[in-house]
Image (tube, rainbow, N blue to C red; front, side, top):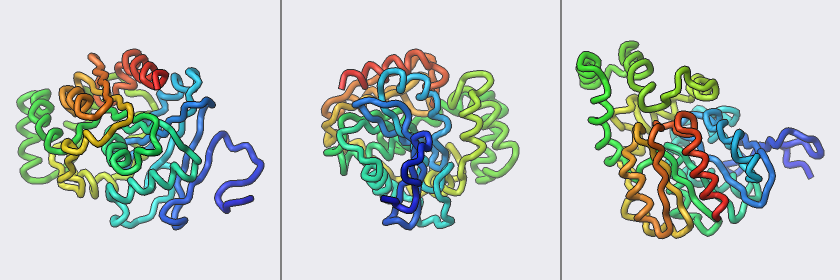
Amino acid sequence: MSDGLNPVGIKVAGIKMVPVMGGRYKVWTKRMGEGPLKVLLLHGGPGFTHQYLEAMESFLPQAGIEMYYYDQLGCGNSDKPDDPALWTRERYREEVEEVRVGLGLEDFVLYGQSWGGMLSIEYALKYQRHLKGLVISNMTAGIQAYLGRLDYLKGLLGPESRERLEILDAARDYDNPEYERIMMEELYPQVICRTKPWPEPVTRAFRDANLAIYHEMQGKSEFVVTGNFKDWESWDRLHEITVKTLTIGAAHDTMDPEDLKRMATMVANGTSLICPNGSHLAMWDDQAVYFEGLLKFLKGL
């Protein structure tokens, strides 16, 4: 029976459009691989796409794991309504549940990276009865802890660039080309992705990002969180997460790896993996360590 979104009886490479917000909008999903263990992937940003997670394709399906990409509303191949009221943690959390229902997932693993890690924590705190396991990758449990890492990140810049960045930050001149140059050419190659050049899926995800969502939720700057998740803190609720949980951090990440270790001790059943050569996108720049640890966790569920 047709749902009006997906053709019946046609092979479409695992792609399924899923209705969200009671059918007002639709989001894009894609299944890859087949197996009893199913993993739903939540990308970061907010406002980016599933594209930078394409490293998963080289590892999970071959291990007999069924994985699902999903572009969150406003992102990538999904609908892109122009409505800032939609860009909230709570609405995205309910969207994840609608996607779970739409894909028929039960007793599945939720994987969240960066903002997706925040979203996965939010989902687990309300809906963990549906989860078999949880993976929180490159995301601390609160914004204050992230802000505590910023001095370390700024310290990676040369004195001249750091001073210039402080001036631009103070003036909130985030659209200044110089600000973007310092970020993209000096800082991001150290803490976002350390491969040279960047893998094409990473550059594609940056190219296709919906910055309106990023600005609404994070703010205009990586260093000053002014968006609507600026007060988010979940440290005191981590103990409520009882499913098996893996936290993944990296030595050169924008998130403090010590925070990721501590989170694993605060959930009821956690383990942590720290990638010694990795940054925020450690699935690319410390790939062997990242996927060895991830697959070991998934196969142990």
